[in-house]
Structures are given as structure tokens and as C-alpha cells.
Amino acid sequence: MLLMIPGPTEIDERVIRSMARQMIDHRSEDFRELMRSVVGNSKKIFETSSDLFIFTASGTGGVEAAAANLTMPGDKVLIPTAGLFAERMGEAFQAYGAEVIQAKLDNGEGPSPDAVKKLLDQNPGVSIVAFPYNETSTGIISKDVKEIGRICRERGVLLVVDAVTAIGGVRVAADESGIDVCVAGTQKCLAAPPGLALVSVSERAWEKVSKKKVRPPYFDFFKYKHFMERWETPFTPAITLFWALDESLKMILEFGYERWLARHAAGAAALYAGLRHYGLELYAARGYESPIVAAMHIPKGLTDTAIRETMKKRYGVLIAGGLAHYKGKMFRIANIGLIGRDKIIYTVYALGKTLNTLGMEADVETAVEQAEKEFDRNWSG
Ligand SMILES: Cc1ncc(COP(=O)(O)O)c(C=O)c1O
Image (cartoon, rainbow, N blue to C red):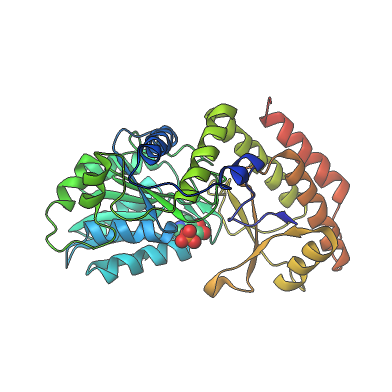
């Protein structure tokens, strides 16, 4: 089955093999060496020199860790919202006592400098701005996060970014973008198994963290910082997943980080060329199309189940539907991690055939040709 869902994604044989090992002591030099390697290479992908912690938790745990360490009761947290994962960030901050302003963005747009500036003007007293870099639920990506970071710094506001699907797929550059707490997951563009959350914490964020008196017992940044001094974690880590992440990061860096990003960009160009040729309507507005996952409205007369089941049963391609309140209203196709030219092109082909099977008139040949052309135009190998 070809996994074209937005995570978990396919992992390389090398990564699979790295996990088939006997356990080691997590208070040993072997583990410390592993930790040095994973954290060092993760920082290269985050492009950060800040502290970076690895929690045994999925991406949601990383977002909760940010909320738990930063939020003081009554803090105003602004969340420009383009989908479900922004809503979930709101829930996390609210659970730790924040007053959350869940500002819905309209017309398929994601967070942008203009939107953030306007919302900050309308909502005085905000101390944290938080949003997903890439909103996986609607296929909408934010615009110019570096400028958003600058606006936040200028106003003394912290910027928290859920880069769970963005990291490794697009250049996040946490330091240059002024991201104070950046959260990533492993099962997306890092092409590792699910189960670890990576979180970077800037100097500015530490100032706020240090003011918090009641600390979370599991996610306490201070505990992690203390144990990181000897390259350990406070609690038993998922060692197997550390091996896997270590291997996948090495694989990405050997492939070349820039090339890895460029292949995602080429895959996105090819995928969107195919989808546009079929006349499918995207959730994202022009300029906000996520290179990581495309989310489409269901064409009139069809259902999300019919599209997904035909893709799966006839062509062996697994694509995603809508989540929560988007269920039944969309279908989504990912361009993540190891997915390269062949898989994208085959998916464009399989989707066209599926649409035809369901009674539409899709020009499969031209869509495939255009997708191929776009991939090759954007990728030099
Ligand atoms: C943007 C974003 N944030 C958070 C999550 C949640 O991650 P996890 O399922 O690993 O907890 C996801 C999962 O798809 C996501 O895409």
C-alpha cells in the first residue's frame, strides 16, 4: 500500500533495521552518544542554536509541553486559526489557564504578517502568538514566518510554532524566523516512526519559563535542561525511536538537507499541477497551498469515501479524508519524507483513474504529463 497520508509516512529500510536491537541502559555512555548525535543533527534541521529537547510523546505532547511551560493563568494567547491543529493548540493553552483568542482566518488563508499585525492591534495585551507552520488539516501553510517573528519580537510577544509537519519539508529556520518555541514530530517529513516530539526553546522563552512557579511533572523544560547537561533525559526515553530518528536524520543529511527540501518542493509542484488539471478545488487560497499536504473539496456528486476506497482498492494508494468537523468534506494527499517523483506521479495517475471510475471526465494523460514536467522543472537530481 502506498502511504500518501500526512503521517505516519514510509520509513527507509535503514531506519527499520536501526530499531532491531537489544535494549541499552539509558544512563550509559552508549545512550549519551546517541543523544549527542540526535540532538546535534536535529538542530541542523531546525537551524537553531537554542536548547532542543526530545520528549517521548507524539507531536501533540510537544505542543502541550510548550503550553505547560509558558502559560501563566490569565496570559492572552493569540492563535491565528486556519484549521484543526490551530484549534488544538488553543485547547492546550486554555488547559493551562490562558485566555485564548482563537482568531479564525477566512478564505483559505494561513497566518501572514498582515493578519498577525492586525490581530495584535485588535487584541492588546497578548503575550504569546501561536500557530501551526503548516496546517495539515486544511492543507494551508503560513506566509513569511520570519516577518511574523520580527513583528512579535518588536512587540515583546513570544512566538510558538507547531512545525510538526513543516520541519524537514520546508525551511523552518527556527532562529532566523524568530521562533521562540518550535515543536516538531518525527513521523512526517523527517521520515522516522511516530513517538518523539522535538522542542526548541529560545533565550526569550526561557525568561518566561523561569517565571512559572508550578511546573509540569513530565514536560518540565528545566528538568530536561538539567539532564541534557549529561546528554540524558529525566525519564526513560523510547530508545528504539531514538535509534530510528538518529538514522533518519543521518539519511537526510547524507542525501543533503537542501536537496531533501528541494525534492519536497518538486513533489508539491508536480502534485498541484495534476490536481489543478483535474479541476479540483483546494481549501487553500493562492499562495497558501501547503507543499506538504494538499486538501481538496469533494467534487460535486462524489463522496470522500468513494474516492478514498477506490484509490485504495483499485490502485493501492492510501489517501486521507477530513479530520473532526472536516470529516466527509475533503480529501487530502501528502507529499512527505520519502515520497518522491514516482509516487507522486503514480498518485496523480491513480486519482485521475479514480475520478473517471466515479463518473467524472478527468484527462489522466495530460495531468500526468504536466505533473512530470513540473517535477523535472523543479528538480535537478
Ligand atoms: C500540524 C500538526 N500538529 C500536530 C499534530 C499532532 O501530532 P501527533 O499526532 O503526532 O500527536 C499533527 C498531526 O498530524 C499535525 O499535522
